[in-house]
Figure 1: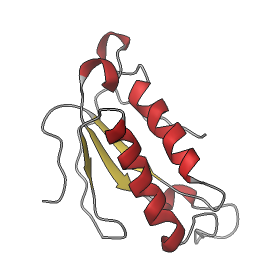
Figure 2 (figure 1 turned 90 degrees about the vertical axis):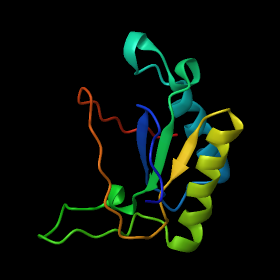
Figure 3 (figure 1 turned 90 degrees about the horizontal axis):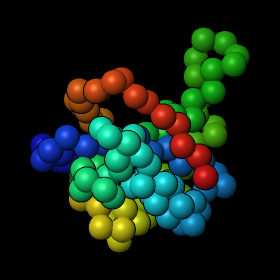
Length: 123
């Protein structure tokens, strides 16, 4: 097992596109950490809830044409990997408890989605 949450928290799937920067990563980290979506309209910052950060280039799938998605909007590994790391590091700098997956690995991610609540956040 690479990363797992020791208590209920957030699974954060992170996709990186070509124009994302380290500033984008820091801005989104702050937004995620302070987002009031937990019980009682609290945030991870309020409760200390842990976060599992998983890189997910497939969030940038383009499916408008044909039956086969393309991922041209996703940044290449050389750009994306450091930014996913910067995102996780920015969360840690805010005081978050962060676990991560392995960039580019074929991972089996299991979660119990309480709600369900799924949000797309952009900087």
